[in-house]
Image 1 (cartoon, rainbow, N blue to C red):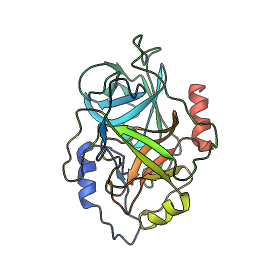
Image 2: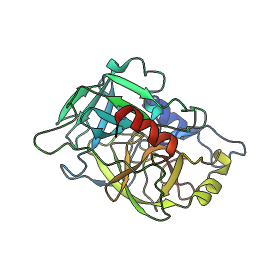
Image 3: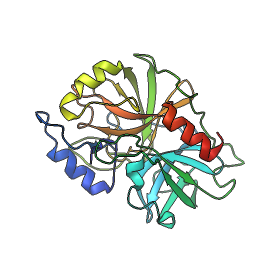
Image 4: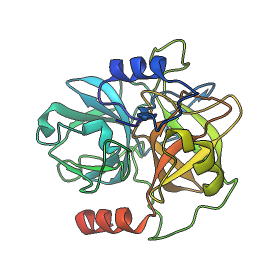
Length: 268
């Protein structure tokens, strides 16, 4: 989901990090990437036309979302350390299957947010540029998702949908072959910070969401969380997956520093 929950530098390392995670850490603990939808439902074909599988050397490592026909967005921790090797990455679009269907497009350039901090996962966002019109489909199976306005607020207890191919349980670190989704509720920012205070808390560039017995997890990192057709966040980090005591943490895309950076690069 370094401090990731939904984050993944390497998928196998993410699984190891979760095993080592302790709920009783007294000092701020490293955050772990998250990469699975726990207790979710299988998506219908075409239900999430903006959803992408980010692949490194043909292997799924994270989720991503389409912003325009030549721009996608993911978590910075997914590409951290490899932003100068965009040719190692591809994006599968137009399929609910993780490894088949749709089409696979090469990444031409990677832009990691300049304020990203791998120590606390702040500003955990990156932009991926492809060839013109690469992220599109005449059949309508591929489409961009709307971004929030600069500074747009996220209200408490708003239903939001998170989707991905990540692990299906903490004890069974196997990626889902089919795209899954689940509905979570946004968490009050102060409560979110207090719930995670032993793990460093959250910044204004983050927000939390949670629901009983369901969550995003390893492999879902970088993927979308949306509300009312708007991409409000990116799966970022957390403490375990579907833990009743710890909400999931997401990058807040409406944060002025993030949203203006996106607009500067993409004109969106």
